[in-house]
Length: 345
Image (cartoon, rainbow, N blue to C red):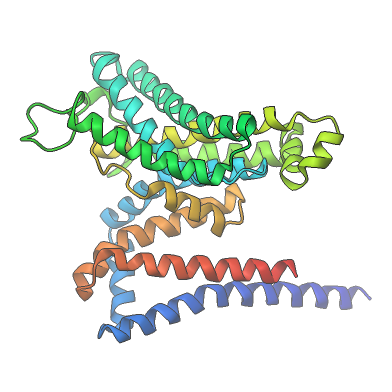
């Protein structure tokens, strides 16, 4: 009997491995056909993407750096989803976090010591993201407006607000008319943990693990699960659904805002009109690919980071635009969602 159970368990594990292999292999094969149609050798292209990205310390460092904001935004998306909220607003919350932290660096802590200055920038970034997330959840709770729609709209408003600030009040007078702010002070820049990699990745992973722990191991996490799966049952159980969703969205927005701060303090050192463009959407995709599991989102965020960086390699090796890699991202997402749907049957 025990042998039979072990055989069934082994067969189930093998089936799971095969499903994941298929979810990875199918997108690669489909994208290879696309490359062939464009007159590009897919084997050489894939080899160049891997070797140029992981074959040297600079490439590996770039993947890690790009993955940090994706991890934070993905974890933030996972948290809000547990409360039954579809938060597509990571893009706008990231932008407001970048804007607020840059303003803090310029006007509040320009000459402050590193520890105080970076802490104030982080708090300012979190505040910016919380304000933007708070607007969306406030509209949902008070006016019953769909948060998916409002967060997308707020993304566009955030982009225009950042554009206004870098073209106007925050514009660097020595930028030769480029829409960007002055560079933040050197002591406000995140320290490196290894060559080319800053401390942002550690912060991002800590927050992702914290989200997993809170949602899986605490009473509040259980409350989120009940509200997310059945709001009506949560009301009958005596839970304050609106209050809990507000708290979850504020925390989610704050995490995305912190991602914006990390981008300013660890990568760009100044705010530009295009700072973190599409990062929010890629973080959202990473969360979906992980089925809103914060720990799995760390892996999918690294995949997004790899694909983001390898897009430049794709452009140089094949002549195709770097944005072509987004086609592969979309196919990978669809395949993983298909795999997940099959698991639920």
